[in-house]
Length: 288
Figure 1 (cartoon, rainbow, N blue to C red):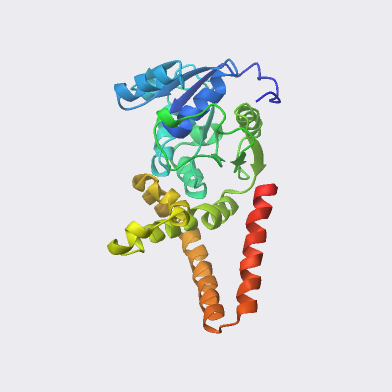
Figure 2 (tube, rainbow, N blue to C red):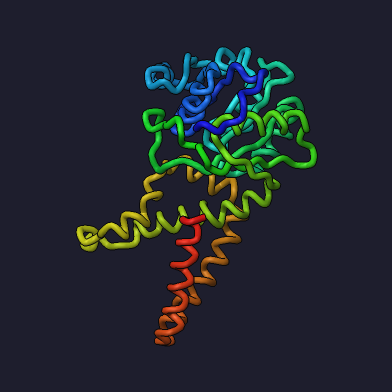
């Protein structure tokens, strides 16, 4: 991406905790900017795969080794592990090191970090890049995954201003376009556009009976693509964002009842107008 801002002088070494699809893509994006990237993985084989793929410069199997001397630590783990990893990383970090993440839930993560470590909370700025795939693993990571994509930062009233400024500079280096909102607003909106749709995709994947499966076509495959995502990761997301997901599911159920009513009424014009609005809404997101 050619139109990135100049690399900040303070940004030289980044540690990535969890070098999978997102972590590896962060690494690729930063290395093209001349940033040294160090990765952490529990398994030596995974760390070395990340090195060979070009996502990181060096890999470690202890958090302390990976984080020591880092200007930024990016936690790319399942959402239920982020707070613990932030507190562990903070033990070896300089006071000016930024800690950020890629988790798709925010409110509970922010609250957990604040309760676990005052110091980690001062250095932490919650983030969520809206990019990814149903695929996993560093072998699927891409240098341009975040180019032009929305990166949501969710500071609250106690977020350190200096760290927030650094987080903005950092995420712009990945090619992302920044949006700021509160953790609670993030969770409600992501429940609507990501978490409930994932559950619906999973429901559609299990909906046809076995004799029907040989008949599925491209439409079913398109609508169930995200159901192929990591069940462990998505279970953690559902547990973390349960209230917002339940709220949006209630809303979805009411909308589904309206669809059933339109169909039951046999009003072709009403059904046509609704389908047309849906088509227009979809096309507007592709052209915007």
